[in-house]
Length: 90
Image 1 (spheres, one colour):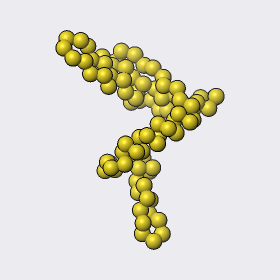
Image 2 (image 1 turned 45 degrees about the vertical axis):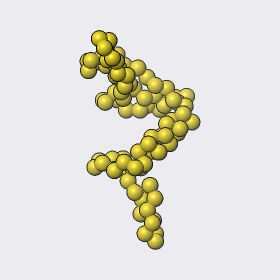
Image 3 (image 1 turned 60 degrees about the horizontal axis):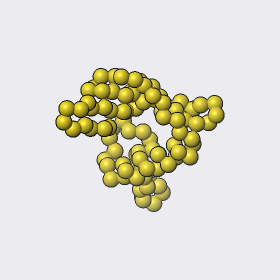
């Protein structure tokens, strides 16, 4: 999100809530984005990622979320895995 100062306008770019990531025919992934100004929708855009770029983004988010508690309803990849012998891995 980009915050402005003074009398200039505020903009926000976020994942489009009602749209899912799409796998394109060429193998790239499309992440639909919503562009808002002052909390009002202005436009939509697509963030195109190669598989390698998507993996890098995924890894970066995993590292950023490492110390955060796992919320209810989180995807399975955020939940601890119980291994034989009692050790946990995330």
